Image (cartoon, rainbow, N blue to C red; front, top):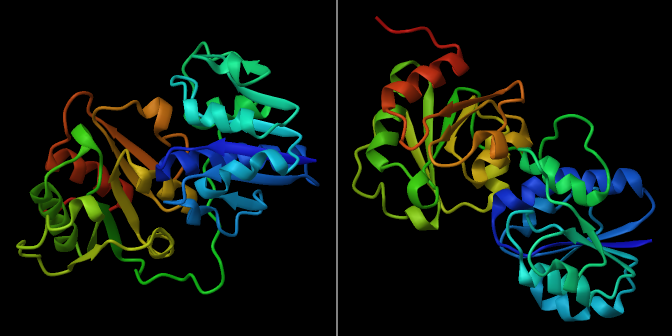
Length: 297
């Protein structure tokens, strides 16, 4: 049996949210050949994943029709119709083409799954398309390869500055929180991506605080596996931290923690401040509890 999974957007978190459904597919069809069509931007997070036999980039999409798929699944979210996801699912020529029943999905898919009628975590929503109810709460998966050991030690807290739009906090907020972390006897590592390049260029870093910029996603993941903890907004690194099972404090200000967060996982904590950013004091108190650091003074 040949199975094609389709997820065409270019976001790290969405690829990681898909991994529990890929696990369900592999469990249901252990002998099948499973391919995933996705953006190449973060496809490297699926390297070494035993649930995927082949990752296809957009350049190979035109060849889907001649690959002989039996089942194709459009893993676009239930709340937003994706024309590209639906088209490539149809173009695969698979006899069974599955997608959520919304938008123009009926023009491309011949098996329509009703959208969830009650709030569910995004991993569970996508699992519906695998035609099976997920067994309890699911977590994203990340698989390491040989030699991916990382450079952080068990005394370092990783802070991620990257986030989209209203979820982004100013650099000064992170610098103050990193300084509090360092003054407690731990270390702090500030991670920035291309969009945050230059934010810390002229900043005076407190002792015990370091900066890592523009690292490949697999290098970031290998560093996190040895970290003491992670602090991050609702963003791709939050899902990566959940996948590598590192204690994490996730900041939710303008998105829904019940849909994207991981408060159900024992090593995770969520700080939810609807419609506003958490203060440094609020974040430090939540982080202190996660780290089991005593109050000073």
